[in-house]
Length: 123
Ligand SMILES: [Cu+2]
Image 1 (spheres, rainbow, N blue to C red):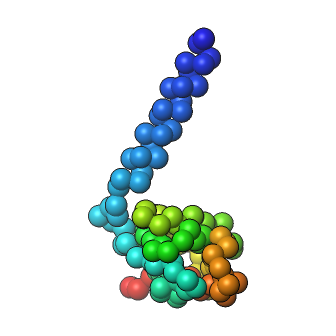
Image 2 (cartoon, rainbow, N blue to C red):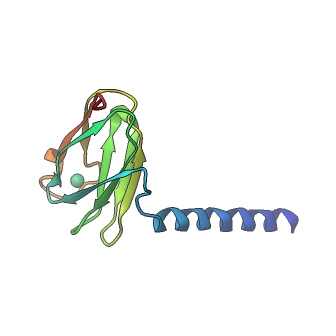
């Protein structure tokens, strides 16, 4: 009984945190970058960020479920129609990183990719 109750409380707290996270938009110190994932392209498909600058990528998918994945940075999210998927990051490494859709979305899925480019912060 005691264990069951503890599990219930933990599950409830988890759900609350998820709800809180989804409900919060970009915070004042973050730059929001909207990205649309549609068949079969990310718009924009080249995203330039400054190293050390906090950003939140805000994804929408008007058609079907998509995935955004930057394998080299171990960053990914599902993008579900009707919801905004937010990925917060502070890029720590300069370079060009490939991203791709990792949820099969149709005949053009394999070509659905782009680049995340991290540059030195402007002085
Ligand atoms: Cu896809």
